[in-house]
Image 1 (spheres, rainbow, N blue to C red):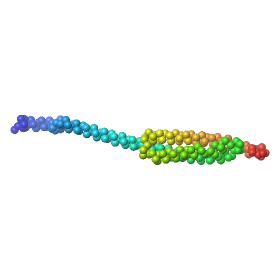
Image 2 (cartoon, rainbow, N blue to C red):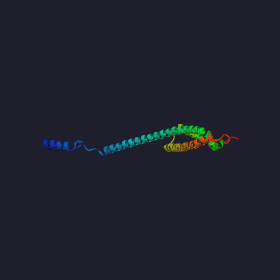
Image 3 (cartoon, rainbow, N blue to C red):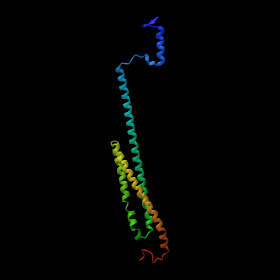
Image 4 (cartoon, rainbow, N blue to C red):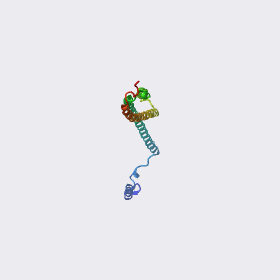
Length: 192
């Protein structure tokens, strides 16, 4: 018996060879239009996946920036409150020093303007963020985060200087107060 001009045994042998080497050899050849369609579809799917991944990466970056801004604002508020408390504690130390010596220190501690300005700036940052969070570009958010970080660093440095000055004042006033206590009352400052 013959099949399409070949003996049946040969047709089975060819079919067995085809299944061992590559199973797809039994498929009819694909028309070029189908190959182009499959290629274009695969490229479109790959492009769509890339766009979705890029959009997700942008959203994550935006969220990280917003989180950093809020964390820095909270940290700045804490620093401002600590600065105000430290200035109050320094007034106690300055109060122990004779008035003529401590006049400059008392004047700088009484002027709470820099701390108030810091609170105003912080409030402005928070209000701006609340009003513009949906429409602000990533570059604008990055600038706001950088400005807030710079302000926080500046306040941290000022608080460190205030702490250092307080420690120096404590160490300087301790021995002076002891010495002043040993002076006769007629020689003490402020007595007339």
